[in-house]
Structures are given as structure tokens and as C-alpha cells.
Amino acid sequence: MRPLLHSHGGDIEVLEFTADGLLRFRLMGQCAGCPAADLTTEELIHTELTQRLPQVKKAVLVREVSPDLLEQARNILRNHHV
Image (cartoon, rainbow, N blue to C red):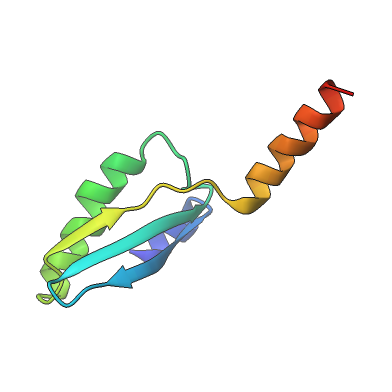
């Protein structure tokens, strides 16, 4: 799974794995915020994880805006309102 994400300039980070089998993760790099992220999640990541790791019952994509992106947006807005 990671080699495929890397080939698209992305990666995956596991945020949490619960005792009941819920794995929360986020996509990073060029995969973060990609319009195909939902398809990638459902078809690639969820399927691969649940087939290869029986303890994973569900893999859920957490969509977050990175602190760096927020800071860039703030700087742009500050420059336009000065």
C-alpha cells in the first residue's frame, strides 16, 4: 500500500487503533486532500488492511487541515487585509 501511495507523492499516518478494531488514519503529501481520497480509502487502504490484518475491522480516513496549510492561508489573508 505504501509503495503505491509513495508513487503518487503521498503517504499514510496511523492516528489511532482501538481495541474494537477501528483504525483511524490520515493521508499525507500529495494524497492529502486529493479528490480521489475517498476512493483510495475505500478500495485500497480499507480493503488491504482488513484482508491482511484480521484485527482491523474498519479503516477510517480522518480529514484534517495541516497546521502548515492553515498558517499559509492566514498569511495570505493578512497580506490582503493590510
